Length: 215
Image 1: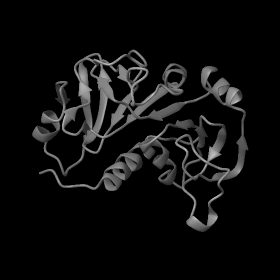
Image 2: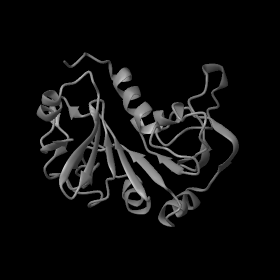
Image 3: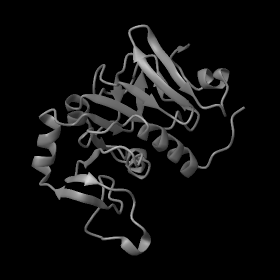
């Protein structure tokens, strides 16, 4: 049976699960929103290089209040830290890493994802809604794309049979991680890799427009 989660709890569940996908040697871009929290959950026994598109390599976790440096922020404009060996880059160089195929994984949010691995994470220009940012470059340039997002938006489906918003990338999503579970777009459809035991299969399917394949 579903449990009531605060937004903070929900976001941290997603971020902690995404962190388990990282492996030593990975260069990992963390996008705005929930993905920035992944930096707080990187296992201590692996060595990854976290990248922030605003120009940081070897991004660290959220700093303690007395360690905040107003000059160091992540892609979402939140206080950030830099681990030993880190570097600050010009924005052009930062995106050169992305466009050059040097990012192993990008973790980003989405407004919609569908069973074919398509992703939409921006809306109509001129409206008070999310803009494209660097997502199009990241989705096209990263070797693996992980979507980290809440499963629904005010009860509305976000994991669809087919995206209805303009696509950021076509067939580029490798994995979807939500508070309800982990899902992989495949040629057979959307396979359920893992479920959160706080939710039943029926509840997860009801919250998902795409038909799920439970194995």
